[in-house]
Image 1 (tube, rainbow, N blue to C red):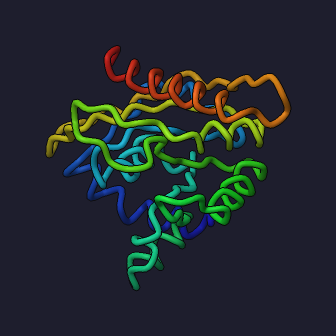
Image 2 (spheres, rainbow, N blue to C red):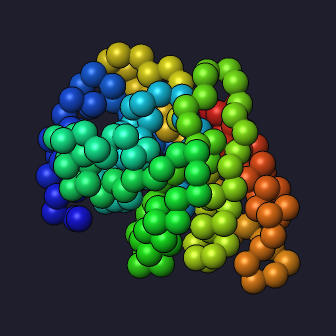
Length: 196
């Protein structure tokens, strides 16, 4: 992925740096090795904004809805950039296995815990997928806040929070524990926005 990712990143970066520049606040908090980046989601541009903000060094595997991946040209480019599909609205075992494989191999994975875009000013219900992935792979969760408003020709500050390891009683965790972790995660994400 590294070569294709670098090429696509280099092509996209000039556009974003001019029209929608993104600035990373808290870059020093990005951990070494694999990590699960979890952000709020209000706009289609959110994944690109985060990828541009953290820089080419911190390559991301982005989990995106399967509809994007089926588009002939767009899907091809997304796959080359390291994006992988998830079927929303059902338990997609394939997407979960893919995410686990990437995390265990030391790569960064980006997903949106709410599962879909949420209108500005609203807070969606957190799904438990991120909690389950972090617990089962032993990687840290990195909460990220991405502002809904991204003015043209002005910096959008993407805020990176402190990485942390969610705790559960047993080896795998229970549904109740995953739910509590998911709710805590979203609180951490939105707290970053209030503090910024």
